[in-house]
Amino acid sequence: MVALAGGVGGAKLAHGLAQILEPEQLTVVVNTADDFQHLGLAISPDLDTVMYTLAGIANPETGWGIRGDTFEFLGALGRLGGEAWFRLGDRDLATHVERSRRLWAGESLTQITRELSRSLGVGPTILPMTDEWVRTIVETDEGDLEFQDYFVRRHCEPRVTGFHFKGLDDANPTREVMNVLEAADAIIICPSNPFVSVDPILNLAGVRDGVGRGGRPVVAVSPIVGGQAIKGPAAKMLAELDYSVSALAVAEHYRGLITGFVLDNVDAALAPEIESGDLRVLVTDTVMKSDADRARLAREVVDFVTAG
Amino acid sequence: MVALAGGVGGAKLAHGLAQILEPEQLTVVVNTADDFQHLGLAISPDLDTVMYTLAGIANPETGWGIRGDTFEFLGALGRLGGEAWFRLGDRDLATHVERSRRLWAGESLTQITRELSRSLGVGPTILPMTDEWVRTIVETDEGDLEFQDYFVRRHCEPRVTGFHFKGLDDANPTREVMNVLEAADAIIICPSNPFVSVDPILNLAGVRDGVGRGGRPVVAVSPIVGGQAIKGPAAKMLAELDYSVSALAVAEHYRGLITGFVLDNVDAALAPEIESGDLRVLVTDTVMKSDADRARLAREVVDFVTAG
Image (cartoon, rainbow over all chains, first blue to last red; front, side):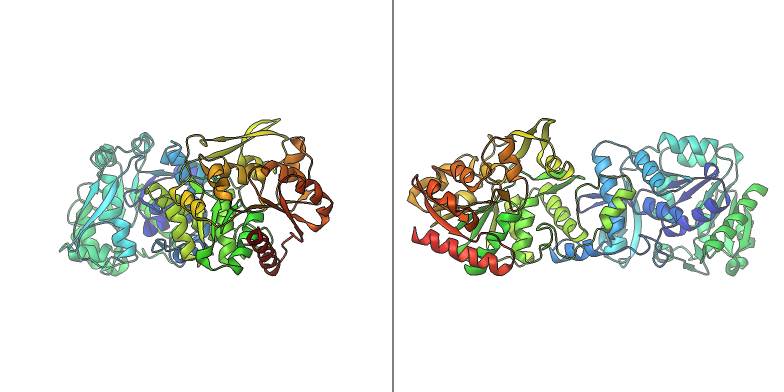
């Protein structure tokens, strides 16, 4: 089973899958287009969120960062006049420093992620989508913004008019990603932001074809529930880009690639229109508040996929 | 007044001088030859010790690092399999990250030190001896070791056979250092390690001549008291290099450059032999246990210097 994931929402379903599958049955391919350099460090927010969540150490309040982390570094940095807008916890910082050191020493992000994951006791394989640099640029009414600049520093306030991905055309998915896509029995697109979390993965050379190949089930779980995003700016982006803010818009976004779609009970009325194409549909409770919710949804999604 | 200083011992006397002089009356020129790169960060242990001490935030137990600092980063780094042998506190780390970021962005160590010092509320000017890279190599019976490798990781255990300073011949003192040496009424060599803290400063092109020029008082304070170093490996180094482990050996090391020497009451018996050359001598209590001790010694040293 291969899951494609971005940050918090994707990590939750990935964690559910990790609870019900054997480690060797699951690979999570993670977006790296919102990676950035900050304070001279290489930061991979989505990789870390997935890694910390699967390690069971994610901060349950925020979804990102490490539970119980302290912020002494950030406080001191602020007092020195440094850029303290990106919330880096003291323990979290160790990940960025160690990753950066190894990257500058020539190791690949894939290799580093494997070893950091192992150190944290993560069972399933976590793969960055690429070892090359891809950068999400959010086009807004205030000009182009790097993703973290838009997302964290500007709190998603500027109105979005589009996206582009610097470096994407020149980047390649890793051999490891192409191999797991080739070997997968099914592919699950986690409830992550379609525009800035999943599209960068799918738009890498060969990935969309690799996902769609061979008549395997490809199932997406809607990140939009009742017209709202559980987390993050997906709903705001849909509205600003003149889409309907609904699970239907997400299903349409993936239509042609996916064979099945999972949406929430509150959106059950949308099921007929989604099914009217060639899509199978699962309507269930998709909001994951507890570890048990994650495992239950993962079980239902796997059963749905397997039945397809 | 210009003080030449290394780490903890030098920082204490510099702090005493800072207590009794106006900020514009004091410049501390600091050794950077034990700077190193670690975890991809540029670390300047002596500069930081002087800066934290003058800012009143140094850890009083160790002399280095920040009082009350936490070690969450270091713990997490260890769990990730990273190199955790160099004790980096969470708040201390902010200094290294911010300094590194600015260095890589092209700012000079002099400029960065000025701004970090200002952020921490330090009054006197702290100048790195050079903006270029000089690296102390400790020659030992186990081969050449980078200074921090010898000092921290190996706890000064290998037997020292000599020193050399990579990059020293190609490095220049900064314009700021040469200007303050030119303008100084007197120069105080703090009770720092003669071999690895003071010699790198003196051996920079033009500095020894700049210090000795113009018949000004140049006074050194002995870091050796009663045959022992107050802090650090100076005594062990003297012994391994077949010097007598005494204030006399320190005075001889600086003879020809200094005009006066300060040694501790417990070493009063050495005073006649030190004076037998052309040196003035001050015998007093040189052990600084409190801020008041530092101010008192600084006052005595300044009076001694001024009387010369």
